[in-house]
Image 1 (tube, rainbow, N blue to C red):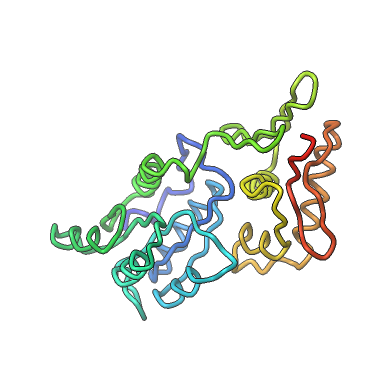
Image 2 (image 1 turned 180 degrees about the vertical axis):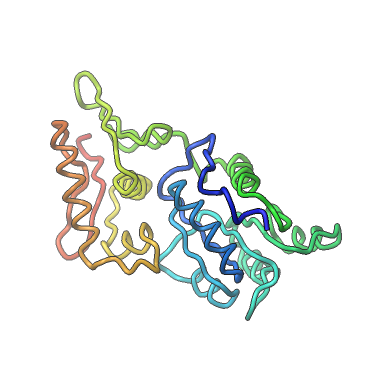
Length: 250
C-alpha cells in the first residue's frame, strides 16, 4: 500500500492548527498508525480506535469534542457506513472522510448517501488524505479560523502566536503547540469556567494517560512564558472548579 514509505517527509503547505481533534477509526494497524503519525506531526490531537462500536462510545463521550472524523467503511462490530448513518440520525454535523477499498460508483454513492462528506479509496498517498482534509476545512471554515480574538488578545493561527493589543506597541508572543492548544480552547469559551479534567481529555490523546497535574503544569509554564514578555496572563484559576479566560478589563 502506498502509505507505508516516505510519509515522514511530507511537508504540508498549510499549517493546520492546534486544538483540532480527530477521531480516526481504522482496523488496519499499519495504516492506522501511519495516518495517526502524519496527523500528529501536523498538530492534530488524534484518537485512533479499531472498531465502530468503540468509535461510537468516543463520539457519545461528554469529555471530547471532535472537529473531524476519518472512518473506514469495513470495520469490526459496527461498519463505517452504520456509524455515519447514526451520526446523521442524531443530527450530528461532524465532518466525515470515509476510507474504503470499495471504489465502485455505487459504493461511493452509498457512502455519501449515508452522510459522509468525502470518500477516499485505498490505496492512497498521505498527501491526498491531507488535501481532502484541507478541502473539508474550506467547506466548513469554522473548523479552522485564521485568527481568534477574545478581549484584547488574538491568536494568530498562521504563526502560532498570541497577539497582545494591550501592550504598547502591541506585542506578538510565540507559543508552543500545547500552549496554543490551551489558549485556543479557552478563548473559544471566553469567561466560562472549564475544568482541568475537561481540558485534559480534550487536548491530550486519550491513550497517553497523562499525569493528573499535567494541565496545572502547562498553565504554570504558559503564565511564566507570558510574564517573560511582560504580559499579564488572562487565564484565571478558579479553585476547585477549573480555569477561565477572563475578558473583563481586557
